Image (cartoon, rainbow, N blue to C red):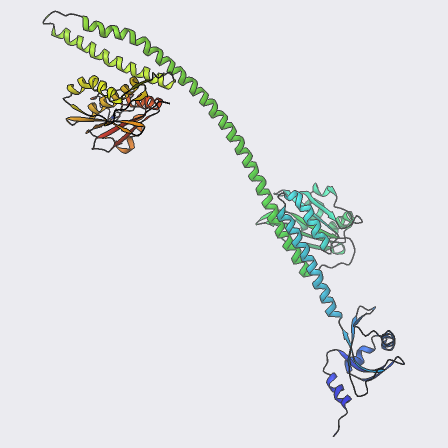
Length: 540
Ligand code: ADP
C-alpha cells in the first residue's frame, strides 16, 4: 500500500515540542500554503496574526529567526528550516515553520542574567573592601557599587557606636542610585529607636534577623518611618560579627508594589556577613594602632627615664672615682711615713712584744699601701688617665726583671719559677713598665694560688705578637668563674687566708687593652691555670 509521504510527515511532527507546519512558498506571487501542521501549531497560530506575519516574511525574503513579544507578556519564537521536496524550484520552496512559546525560558534567562549582574556587584564591592586599608573610605564606595547592581534605589549603613542598649548609630554610608531618591535624614543618628516605635525592628535586627517590610504592612506605630523617608519597601539587614551587633545595612525602594526575590535576600545577607568581617577588622586595627601608639609613647618615656638615670649614674660614678682618687692620694703620704718610721724605730734588746707590734705596723701599713696603690691604679684606668711610655726593648728583658722582683715572694712560699725564654730575640715597642706590672700580678697570683713546688713562665713569639704565659698547678678556675675574676673586687673562695683585693686582674686586663693586647685564661677546676698576656710587636 502506498502511503502519502505528507501524512507520514504529519505523524512525525506530532512528537515535536514546538508548533510545526510544513509550508509551500511561492516566491513569485508571494503566497504560501500550509500543507500540514501539528496540533501544537494549531493552538499557537491563533495567538498572533499568522497570515500577515508570513506575508511579511515572504515579501522581504527574510526567513531569519524572529521573536514576537505579545502585549500579554507572552514571547513566541519563530524559525524556518527549508528542505527539498518533489517539485522544489526557483519559485517554489518548501519549509518547516516552527513556532515556540519561550515565555518561561526567556524569563529564566533574564533572571539568570540579572543574578549574574548582582553577583558581579557583590564581588566588585567586596574587592573594594579588601583592597582599601580604611573601611571609612572604602565602605561608601563599595556599597554604592553594590547598590548600582541591585534592584534597590538607595542604601545606607548605620554603624552601631553604642554597643549596649539603647543603641546609637552613626551614618557611615548614605547613597542612592539617582538624585530623585531621598537620602536618609541625619536625625536617624540620634533617635531613640525603641521609644520611636521601632522596637520590633531593633529587637529583630539585634537577634540577627532581617526586616523586609512594605509600607502597607507596617504597624501603625512604624508608619511614620515610611512617611518620613518616602520609602515604599525597606530591607534592613543586621551586620554582625560573632555575637556583636555592629550596625544596620539598609536598602530602600521608593516605588510601590515591589518584591524582592527570596534568592536575592540570601545574597544581601551574604554581603552583610562580609561587611561584619570588614567592620570588625577595622575596629581591631584601630584598637591595635591605639595600643601601638600608647606603647610607643611609653617606650619613649622609659627611654627618657633611662637616659636620665644613666646621666645620674655617670655623674655619681665620676664623683666616686674622684673621691677615691683624692682619698687614696691623701692616705698614701701619711702611710709612707708610718712604714718608713716603723723601720727606723730602734727598740731595746729584749722588748720582744714591742718588736712584734712594730712588725704588725710595718706589714699592715705595707698591705694598706698596696691596696691604695691598686685602687688608685684602677681609678686612673677607669677615668682614662693612664699615659703610655713607649720604648723599644726585648720582651725577655722584662721577664727577667719581673722574675727578680717576684723572687722573694716565691722563696717565701718555697716555690721555684721555671722560665722559658723565646727562641727568637726580637724587640717590641711598648710600655715596659705596664707589661711588668701585669706580669708581676700574674706571677704573684700563680705563687699565691698555686700549690705545687714550681710555676712555669713562658715567653714566645707568634709572628708579630709576643705571648707571655704563666702556668700554675693550683686548684684551677671553674669555667663559670673565668669571666668573673676579671671584674674588680671579685675574689673566689675568699676565706681571708690568701691576701688580696680582687683588683689585680681587672687592672691587668685594663692595662693590656691599653697596650693593644689581651689577657687570656685556660683553666679547669683542679688542673691549674694558665694566664696568657698577648702584646703586639708595635703599639699602635
Ligand atoms: P687578688 O688576687 O688580689 O684577689 P685578682 O684580681 O688578681 O685579685 O684575682 C681575682 C681572683 O681570681 C682571686 O681572688 C682568685 O680567687 C682568682 N685567681 C686569680 N689567679 C688565680 C690562679 N692562678 N689560680 C686560681 N685562682 C686565681
